Image (cartoon, rainbow, N blue to C red):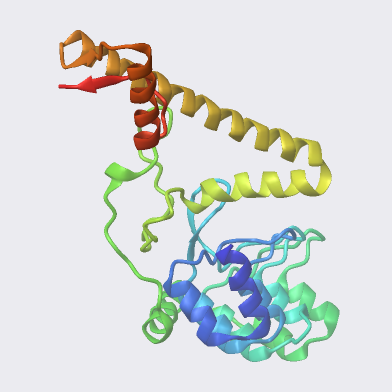
Amino acid sequence: MSGDQLRKFAVMGDVPNLKQLLRGGANPCSKDKDGLTALQYAAWNGHAECVEILVANDRGTDVETGDHESSLDLQSDSGFTALHLSIAGSVPDIAIVRYLVLAGSNLDVADSLGRTPLDLADEVGFKQAIELLEQEPPTPEECDAFYEASKERHLVQQHREHDFSDCPKDEHGNPIVTRDDKLPMPVELTMYEHHIFPFAEKNYKASRQDGAEAIRNLESVLGEACANEERREVLAHNVEHNLRKQGKMNWRRGSVSEKSAEAKKMRESNGRGRRGSVIK
């Protein structure tokens, strides 16, 4: 899925492909099995330009709830934010730490062990980060100004007005809105990402852990397909019945050989093998 590709390019530091995915609607809030986002991977691996791009294009969707949110302070399963990982990642970078702080990262978020970014900087001995985080933090106004300036330079996410009439509906008939800034979606995609992901994840896990469940899912789909075929057959017979009832379709009268020849002709023409009936 696009989230996997986004994280892959963030790890590699592939700026052009990262921008292309974000421009096409990739979800920056998408997480992997460890709860890590593309921004966290970029910070972890010291890719400063990728961090800048992902900060400016941070608006995404929680794949489980469909809630619209920012990826800036999302936490992994271990409680790490992008700021934590810019300090204790594989490539600590004070420029990335400073950028995340100026962009408005929460300095008080604690990981699963109760460590804030400052605690983590102290633990790993990252002196530049300690000095930076011990200073007076930027004001909300300064963070907002920096964030807007960042968007002017790097924003590629596209905004469009969305017609809620074609949204999926909940049990109360209300539209399920997955993102405030709806991005263009290919016509062939009829499901929203937070609907697709749980289904795909379920079947992937089933194939890995319980092959029988995956087979049962397949049988269910095949059963539904057969039921649909039966419904179409019933509908076809109903149409034929109504036409006969209205006098628009009559049975041909003739000998057995004539009927056999007519039936053969019908089979050759439409492959259905219906009895010899004609529409007036």
